[in-house]
Length: 189
Image (cartoon, rainbow, N blue to C red; front, side, top):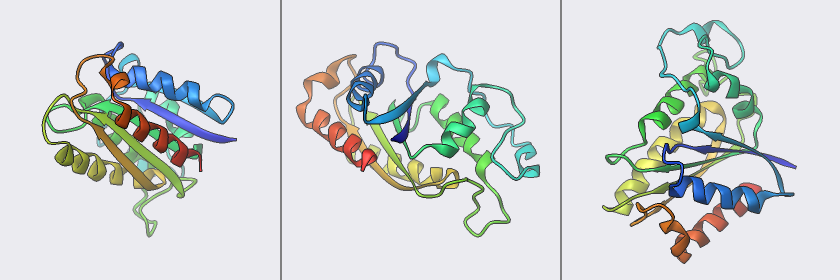
Protein backbone atom coordinates (compact mmCIF):
# COMPACT_ATOMS: atom_id res chain seq x y z
CA UNK A 1 0.00 0.00 0.00
CA UNK A 2 1.38 3.41 -0.94
CA UNK A 3 2.30 5.93 1.73
CA UNK A 4 0.94 9.41 1.01
CA UNK A 5 1.73 12.48 3.07
CA UNK A 6 -0.84 15.27 2.86
CA UNK A 7 0.49 18.66 3.90
CA UNK A 8 -2.11 21.35 4.54
CA UNK A 9 -0.39 24.72 4.28
CA UNK A 10 -3.37 26.78 5.43
CA UNK A 11 -4.18 28.21 8.85
CA UNK A 12 -7.87 28.63 7.97
CA UNK A 13 -9.52 25.64 9.70
CA UNK A 14 -12.76 25.86 7.73
CA UNK A 15 -11.07 26.82 4.46
CA UNK A 16 -10.78 25.05 1.15
CA UNK A 17 -7.48 23.33 1.98
CA UNK A 18 -9.05 21.58 4.99
CA UNK A 19 -12.30 20.79 3.17
CA UNK A 20 -10.61 19.31 0.09
CA UNK A 21 -8.05 17.57 2.30
CA UNK A 22 -10.83 15.79 4.23
CA UNK A 23 -12.44 14.75 0.96
CA UNK A 24 -9.14 13.35 -0.33
CA UNK A 25 -8.38 11.48 2.90
CA UNK A 26 -11.80 9.85 2.59
CA UNK A 27 -11.08 8.93 -1.06
CA UNK A 28 -7.79 7.32 -0.06
CA UNK A 29 -9.33 5.10 2.65
CA UNK A 30 -8.24 1.53 1.94
CA UNK A 31 -6.11 2.63 -1.02
CA UNK A 32 -3.15 4.22 0.76
CA UNK A 33 -1.58 4.75 4.15
CA UNK A 34 -2.20 8.46 4.76
CA UNK A 35 -0.44 10.86 7.11
CA UNK A 36 -1.99 14.32 7.37
CA UNK A 37 0.12 17.25 8.53
CA UNK A 38 -1.72 20.52 9.13
CA UNK A 39 0.88 23.27 9.31
CA UNK A 40 -1.52 25.66 11.00
CA UNK A 41 -1.78 23.30 13.97
CA UNK A 42 1.92 22.47 14.18
CA UNK A 43 5.18 24.02 15.27
CA UNK A 44 7.19 24.50 12.07
CA UNK A 45 10.00 26.94 12.68
CA UNK A 46 12.03 28.75 10.06
CA UNK A 47 15.35 27.31 8.93
CA UNK A 48 18.20 28.68 11.03
CA UNK A 49 20.71 28.27 8.16
CA UNK A 50 23.06 26.85 10.80
CA UNK A 51 24.23 23.95 8.59
CA UNK A 52 23.91 21.58 11.56
CA UNK A 53 22.17 19.14 9.21
CA UNK A 54 25.26 19.05 7.01
CA UNK A 55 27.24 17.16 9.67
CA UNK A 56 25.02 14.10 9.35
CA UNK A 57 24.55 11.42 6.73
CA UNK A 58 20.78 11.13 6.92
CA UNK A 59 18.17 13.88 6.68
CA UNK A 60 17.82 15.54 10.08
CA UNK A 61 17.64 18.96 11.70
CA UNK A 62 19.06 20.28 14.95
CA UNK A 63 15.78 22.03 15.77
CA UNK A 64 13.31 19.97 17.73
CA UNK A 65 9.90 20.88 16.34
CA UNK A 66 7.11 19.16 14.43
CA UNK A 67 8.93 19.42 11.10
CA UNK A 68 11.96 17.56 12.45
CA UNK A 69 9.66 14.80 13.70
CA UNK A 70 8.12 14.60 10.20
CA UNK A 71 11.44 14.15 8.34
CA UNK A 72 11.28 10.31 8.41
CA UNK A 73 7.73 10.47 6.97
CA UNK A 74 8.87 12.81 4.19
CA UNK A 75 11.81 10.53 3.43
CA UNK A 76 9.84 7.28 3.37
CA UNK A 77 6.59 8.31 1.68
CA UNK A 78 5.75 7.39 -1.91
CA UNK A 79 4.04 10.69 -2.60
CA UNK A 80 3.20 14.03 -1.01
CA UNK A 81 0.22 16.28 -1.67
CA UNK A 82 0.37 19.92 -0.66
CA UNK A 83 -2.88 21.85 -0.27
CA UNK A 84 -2.62 25.59 0.35
CA UNK A 85 -3.89 29.04 -0.54
CA UNK A 86 -1.93 31.49 -2.64
CA UNK A 87 -0.76 34.43 -0.49
CA UNK A 88 0.50 37.52 -2.28
CA UNK A 89 1.40 35.50 -5.38
CA UNK A 90 3.44 33.03 -3.29
CA UNK A 91 3.36 30.10 -0.88
CA UNK A 92 1.93 31.01 2.55
CA UNK A 93 4.70 31.80 5.05
CA UNK A 94 4.26 28.59 7.06
CA UNK A 95 4.55 26.48 3.90
CA UNK A 96 7.61 28.43 2.79
CA UNK A 97 9.21 27.58 6.16
CA UNK A 98 8.33 23.91 5.50
CA UNK A 99 9.98 24.10 2.07
CA UNK A 100 13.06 25.85 3.48
CA UNK A 101 13.46 23.12 6.07
CA UNK A 102 13.85 20.50 3.34
CA UNK A 103 17.36 21.94 3.15
CA UNK A 104 18.01 19.26 5.78
CA UNK A 105 17.91 16.74 2.89
CA UNK A 106 20.65 18.53 0.95
CA UNK A 107 24.07 16.90 0.67
CA UNK A 108 26.60 18.85 -1.35
CA UNK A 109 28.80 15.76 -1.79
CA UNK A 110 26.13 13.98 -3.87
CA UNK A 111 25.78 14.57 -7.63
CA UNK A 112 22.08 15.40 -7.19
CA UNK A 113 22.70 17.27 -3.89
CA UNK A 114 20.31 14.96 -2.07
CA UNK A 115 20.65 12.54 0.83
CA UNK A 116 17.01 11.47 0.52
CA UNK A 117 16.56 7.76 1.03
CA UNK A 118 14.25 7.62 -1.99
CA UNK A 119 14.50 9.83 -5.05
CA UNK A 120 11.55 8.58 -7.10
CA UNK A 121 8.64 10.14 -5.25
CA UNK A 122 5.68 12.08 -6.62
CA UNK A 123 4.64 15.54 -5.45
CA UNK A 124 1.35 17.26 -6.14
CA UNK A 125 0.53 20.85 -5.31
CA UNK A 126 -3.12 21.92 -5.24
CA UNK A 127 -3.55 25.62 -4.48
CA UNK A 128 -6.46 28.00 -4.06
CA UNK A 129 -6.50 31.55 -5.42
CA UNK A 130 -9.11 34.14 -4.54
CA UNK A 131 -8.63 36.12 -7.70
CA UNK A 132 -5.92 36.93 -10.18
CA UNK A 133 -4.12 35.16 -13.00
CA UNK A 134 -4.33 31.39 -12.41
CA UNK A 135 -1.60 30.74 -15.00
CA UNK A 136 0.84 32.99 -13.08
CA UNK A 137 0.03 31.24 -9.82
CA UNK A 138 0.41 27.83 -11.47
CA UNK A 139 3.87 28.82 -12.69
CA UNK A 140 4.79 29.93 -9.13
CA UNK A 141 3.57 26.63 -7.69
CA UNK A 142 5.51 24.59 -10.28
CA UNK A 143 8.69 26.57 -9.60
CA UNK A 144 8.40 26.00 -5.86
CA UNK A 145 7.52 22.30 -6.22
CA UNK A 146 10.76 21.74 -8.15
CA UNK A 147 12.64 22.78 -5.00
CA UNK A 148 11.36 19.66 -3.23
CA UNK A 149 13.60 17.53 -5.49
CA UNK A 150 16.24 17.67 -2.77
CA UNK A 151 13.85 15.65 -0.58
CA UNK A 152 13.48 13.01 -3.30
CA UNK A 153 10.44 14.26 -5.21
CA UNK A 154 11.34 13.80 -8.86
CA UNK A 155 7.92 14.06 -10.51
CA UNK A 156 5.32 16.70 -9.82
CA UNK A 157 1.94 18.12 -10.84
CA UNK A 158 0.35 21.44 -10.00
CA UNK A 159 -3.18 22.80 -10.05
CA UNK A 160 -4.54 26.17 -8.98
CA UNK A 161 -8.27 26.58 -8.43
CA UNK A 162 -9.19 30.16 -9.28
CA UNK A 163 -11.93 32.19 -7.63
CA UNK A 164 -11.67 29.89 -4.61
CA UNK A 165 -11.26 32.20 -1.65
CA UNK A 166 -14.55 31.73 0.20
CA UNK A 167 -14.47 28.78 2.62
CA UNK A 168 -16.15 25.79 1.02
CA UNK A 169 -16.30 27.31 -2.45
CA UNK A 170 -14.16 24.49 -3.85
CA UNK A 171 -17.07 22.10 -3.38
CA UNK A 172 -19.06 24.14 -5.93
CA UNK A 173 -16.39 23.84 -8.64
CA UNK A 174 -16.84 20.56 -10.54
CA UNK A 175 -13.87 21.10 -12.88
CA UNK A 176 -11.51 21.81 -10.00
CA UNK A 177 -12.84 18.81 -8.05
CA UNK A 178 -12.24 16.67 -11.13
CA UNK A 179 -8.65 17.99 -11.26
CA UNK A 180 -8.23 16.99 -7.59
CA UNK A 181 -9.58 13.49 -8.30
CA UNK A 182 -7.20 13.08 -11.24
CA UNK A 183 -4.31 14.28 -9.08
CA UNK A 184 -5.13 11.68 -6.41
CA UNK A 185 -5.26 8.93 -9.05
CA UNK A 186 -1.87 10.08 -10.37
CA UNK A 187 -0.40 9.95 -6.86
CA UNK A 188 -1.70 6.39 -6.43
CA UNK A 189 -0.44 5.15 -9.83
